[in-house]
Amino acid sequence: MHTYCDRCNEPADHPIDVWDDPELAALARDLGYRSVCGGCYDDLVVEAREAREQQADDRRVEHRAPAHLAVRLEPADGGAPQETVTEDISESGVQVRIVSGLEAGTVVRISTAEGGADAVAIVEVVWRNGDALRAGLRLVEASESWAALVRSHLTNAAE
Ligand SMILES: [Zn+2]
Image (cartoon, rainbow, N blue to C red):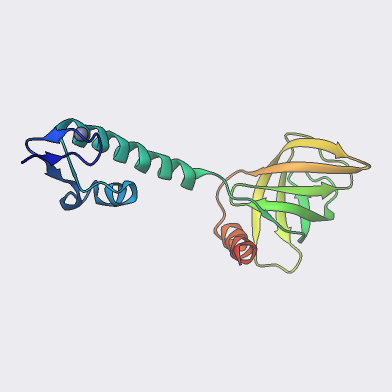
């Protein structure tokens, strides 16, 4: 009597138990496959690899947390500092409301009003939102204090 491949439903002379394969077990259980033929095994290996790559891509997606935080922007070129409020924050950037006087390319030190987090960022884009100005800033280099701030807001947003 034949064993049938769980995937293609063809008779399999040498079925492979995919639950024994640590690389494939999770995917195979999700899909409901236990034993498959050689051809389907090869396909599953490819699918499992693609699934892992997709998960890695998902982790790289930038998570932005909506957050209205009082911050201070100090232009590195000595321009007037301004106190403002963030719209959203991520580990690599921040969107702020601005008063005026910031142009794309300006490097600023951004720090939270209550202290604790700061970073150096470059103004990437300035745009008008209704009658307000917004600026998108990108961190010039990773800041551990800023990353910790973002993580705390992402945690809050997820709850
Ligand atoms: Zn098969």
